[in-house]
Image (cartoon, rainbow over all chains, first blue to last red; front, side, top):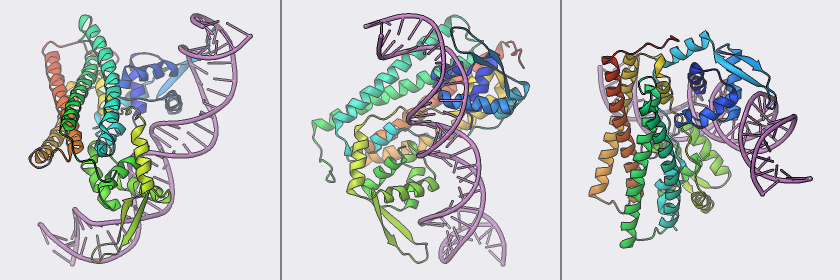
Amino acid sequence: MSLRHAILVLLQDQEASGYDLAREFANSIGLVWNATHQQIYLELGKLNDQSMVKYRHIPQDGKPDKKLYRITDEGRDELIRWLRKPAAPPRIRDAFMVKIAGGDLSDSASILRELDDQADLRRERLNTFESLASKLDDTSRDRDLFTYLTLRRGILDQQAWLHWADEVRSALKKREERPVSVPTSV
Amino acid sequence: MSLRHAILVLLQDQEASGYDLAREFANSIGLVWNATHQQIYLELGKLNDQSMVKYRHIPQDGKPDKKLYRITDEGRDELIRWLRKPAAPPRIRDAFMVKIAGGDLSDSASILRELDDQADLRRERLNTFESLASKLDDTSRDRDLFTYLTLRRGILDQQAWLHWADEVRSALKKREERPVSVPTSV
DNA sequence: AGTTGCTGCGCAATCCGTTGAATAAGTAGT
DNA sequence: ACTACTTATTCAACGGATTGCGCAGCAACT
């Protein structure tokens, strides 16, 4: 639906190859939208067919040739049109949370194990986002205001998650202190 | 991928029709995973083919007949197997955030308009989650610990979002006070 | 010499998800 | 009387996304 628009946003700043975009989807924009290289190449193909982007073929030696894509006026028009109309609220699909909701079937130990794994991941993300944000503090925060705000979103999100994880831990601890009836169905 | 497991989690507590499940996906579990009724009926069909669930046909008068599904032992085994192996991190696909990332192309006014719309939605959700959570406080919070924790997750999430929205508002206000160069590309 | 990893592009099959519609009967409101 | 909503299930078409594979060459490590 709006992978195309995420790509157009990225191409707005600079010419890039599919490979470059894939890397950015694994980092910066990945915060907000993610995609694999297959999807990206496919979408670039379609965007090209619709002349929203065009490319230059760059032969390289030592490395494989590449295509450097840039956005066209039509692409920019399309992007602006899309920006104007309201976005649908994101659908939520969090497998880990489904597990929590069905937590009665698991034992606390395995829940805590996975919780800690997820927490590590979140903490890692928090660090990268924070260091990126502090870099922006130093240099140019006005120019890159929207990058900064996107990072802030990521930071607050991770923090909220980690705070929740603490709640889960203490709730499960309390529960084990005064043992509770084991679900009869298991 | 794990719509099936979300359904199995729901069927764990009680027999339900596709219609019942659809309602629950719009409420409780919808917090964490959402699906339309078409998807649910389809998935119930598959689960039935694989004998993870079975159903009784209930003729009704006044209303259309319905099928009441219940989980089988095989279904429960499958669910437990799934609960054991680590969940993949959720893929993020937030169109509104893509717009923020590409915010240089929009004007502050239209960003703020959409921000407020989204904030309304979040505030609404926050209220429903909070009232559901406080109901659990009164009666049985130990029995429904995982429902409670799921709600807490939703609450913290909405709060973090609303806090972020405040940051966006004040950043955009500051920006307008000392006017900034309009992006040259537009 | 062999493996792994990075840069770079692409195809095909399949599955998941969304949109839109149809059917059918009852209830509640204007 | 007409409209709209609720209960209840299902089909068909399309498009988006994932998984798996393949090609190709260079760099760097073991």
